[in-house]
Length: 149
Image (cartoon, rainbow, N blue to C red; front, side, top):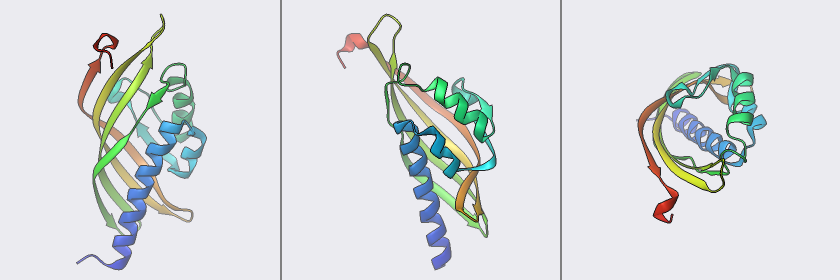
């Protein structure tokens, strides 16, 4: 049976994962300092993104996911599997991510990504934070504009 503390920790970590998705979709990248530890390792390379620490990834996201490149996105997290052992935790979080890519000649193209976040968490004086996040690829699907979507 889970203790009250473990249930609380798991809910806090789940909320942290949902908060991350909200910040990415609203492009509030500076607030990721409230999600990742200062020494976090973040790896978005599975889909061609950067690998780096918190500040490097915030700078990368400001350029790579700007409104003129990706005007709209949604990160839907599900199947959140979290384990906690004291002040550390591990997680595997499924993400369904439709995104709209702005095309240079105008218009947009929609594509969807399926992935998992493989996480390590650490309890800090400010609360739980992600100390390591690695994207793991599942699938990718393009929906061309000519389909009328």
